[in-house]
Image 1: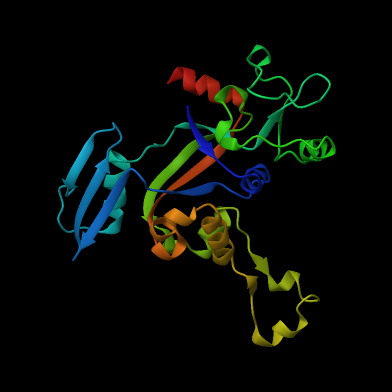
Image 2 (image 1 turned 90 degrees about the horizontal axis):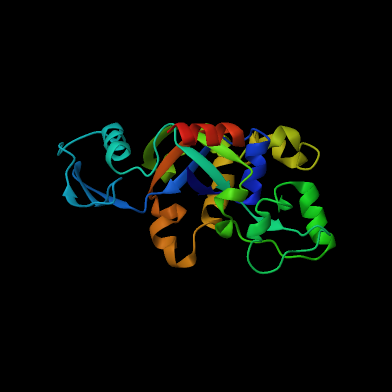
Length: 242
């Protein structure tokens, strides 16, 4: 079972069945293409370093690159079970914040998640601070998914349909005619296209230090994961069987 990070907005999109795809930067390998000649450098799935990996084909298509990358370098594969790391908090029996480290004697007790709106209201009332998703252990995870597909592509290849699958529905003009009456004369379909909404989401996850390499304008190679939510019970049964 492997962890995957989602911010609160995206967890809610998954809960509402508005998101079944996620893109992640390829950080374990670098793909260099010159005149269609492909060289790959990095750590493969087993953690072995490969230098000047030409993949057995000096000239190829992007589909072949994706196929090879997923076979040799991808950290995920179809059927992998993922537990969602999300913003969370543990409360005591009086619904006061458990300070310091997780109460291991009561593992999983009174764990609440920001994506659940009632929990967000409760934490606001007691003026507590949420714990970052990166510090959420597997044993308290509430949401799980199974990988249904994986490929790699360039970030800017995202289409309107793909952006919607990422949980970025955009803002349609036909839902905002009263708010933007003057736009109608231009026959505009989108006020905010899904790709533009995804662009903002993507760049919000990239640190300033990494922007030149992984930001939108850098057009990095990314893993594209398709997934489906499953229950906690199913996740642990599948993980145990594996």
